[in-house]
Image: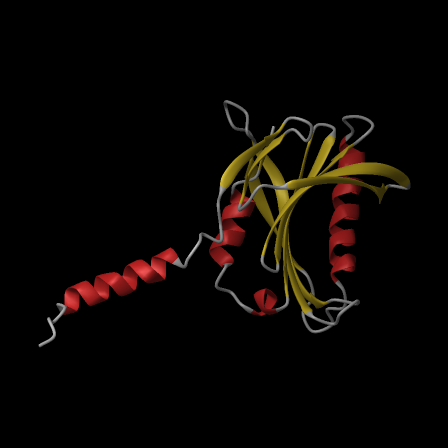
Length: 191
């Protein structure tokens, strides 16, 4: 005669096996960038890169830190302007927003949406900074797969920032990671 295993123990064993096979997709951590002068919550350890961008007829370096989870990129880009100039900040914000939308690819059915947002600084007494949030869906010109971009752009002093989430493929069709997109964007704070 075979001993019977209580149903509770079977359920517990199944649950433990399921948990053992899972690893957290999002390992949120606060990263402070002294070079970029911001703090952000990334879902994994970010990597760094630098490239030139065209702003107001000038080539300026943009420092970027980014982390990828599956087909989603979480990134912060920072451009340091030649000086603390309000007009140049406005031009830089407009240029960076246009560049993000243009780089996404064709989006004839869904024009970009933007709305004003407040981004809190990382100062000991946080300062409210006016920013813009941009959302747009498109199709990659390279592989014709869907893309969805959500970004917050803000300027402070001589720096202009873009916190970007770029979802590709199936992630761009799905809204289940909206919480992670929001966590990244609201976890971004310039100095």
